[in-house]
Length: 246
Length: 199
Image 1: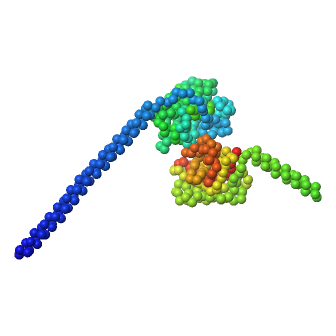
Image 2 (image 1 turned 90 degrees about the vertical axis):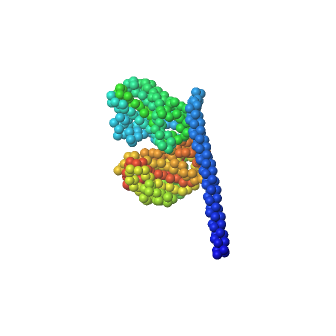
Image 3 (image 1 turned 45 degrees about the vertical axis):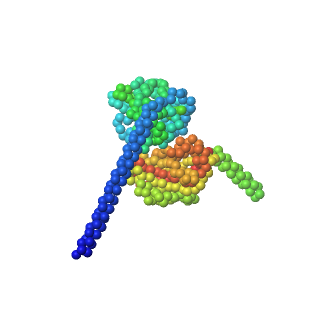
C-alpha cells in the first residue's frame, strides 16, 4: 500500500514537470513571436516611411525642377518628309470619326520649311462644331538627350484665322496620352513653330509635370490642328521639320 | 571563228564590268531573293507554340516578286479582334560594318485588308539581344512596301537600344514579322522578297 502511494507521488511529480515544461516552452514561444512580430512591423513601418519619403523627395525634385532657359544650340531633325511620309499616318481610330476631319496625307513639294518637301494634310473643318485633323507616328523613341520637341506648321494664305495646333505624346507602358497644355494659333501664309519642353518640371503638358522618365519611352508623336467652332476651312495644311533640340 | 570568240569575250567582259558598276552605283547587296529556295529562312520553333503567332507555313512562290522571279510566301491566319503576328527568320552571322541600311520588301495581295503592319527584328551581339524596329510599316493591299532600318550610329530605327558602331558588326538573326493589332482579320499569303543591305 505504501509502495503504491510512493509510485503515485512519483507519477504526479513527473506529470507536473512535463506540464510545467510545456507551459514554459509556450511562454518562451509567445514572447519571442511577439518580439519578432514587433520587429517585423517596425521594419515594415520603417520601409513604408522610407518609401513615402523617397516618393515625397521625387515629387519635391519634380516640383523643384525648372526647365533650363539656356538657348537650344543643337537640333536633330527626326522627320522632314523628303523621301516619303516617314511613317506618319492618320490613325485608324480617327478615320471613321465625324469630328476628326483629316482625310489625306501626302509628301508635298508645294511648301516646306526644311529641305524641299513637307507633309501635306488635307482637312475639311465644317465650322460650327469642334473638329480636328490629327496625324501621328507610332515609334518608340528615347528623347532623354533632348530638351524640346518642335515642329513647323503652315497654313495657306487663303485659310481663315482661328485654327490652332498642339502636339500630343503617348508615353510609357500604359500608353499615356499627354497633350500640350496650350495650343498655338496658326497664321495664314506663315510657318508657325510649335515648341514643347520635355525637361523635368516643364509646364508645357496638361495634367502632368514631367519627371526624368517622361521622355525616355515615347511611343507616339501626334500633331493636332483644331477648329473650335468658328473657323471653317477645306484645304491643305503643311507640317515639316519635326525635330528635337538640346 | 577566232574573231567571233574574241568579240564574244570582249562583250562578256564589258557586260560583267557594267553589272559590277551598276551594283557599286546602287550600293545595294541582295542577301536573300529566294530564287534558289528558302535560303535558310524558317518559322522559329517558339512561334509554333505561341497562340498569338498565326503563321502556318512558308514556301518559295513565283506568284509575286519584287526582285528576280520568286519570293518567300508566308501563309497566315489573322483572326482579328486581338493582337496576332506571323514571323519568319533566318539565323546567320553578319558583319554589316560597310553598310548603312537593312531593307526588305513585303507584299499583301489585293484582297488583303488595310491595317496590317510589318517590321524587322534583329538579334544582335554576344547576348543575342532581340532588337525590334522602333516603328512598323503599314502594308497596302496590292503594293510592295519596303521596310528600311538605319544601321548607322545614332539611328532611331531600333527600339530600346543605343545604336553605336558595334551594333551592325555582329548581327545573328533577321526576323520579319507581319502583325494585326486588334482589327484586321485576314487568312491568306503574304510575300517577302529582296532582303538587302544598302550603303
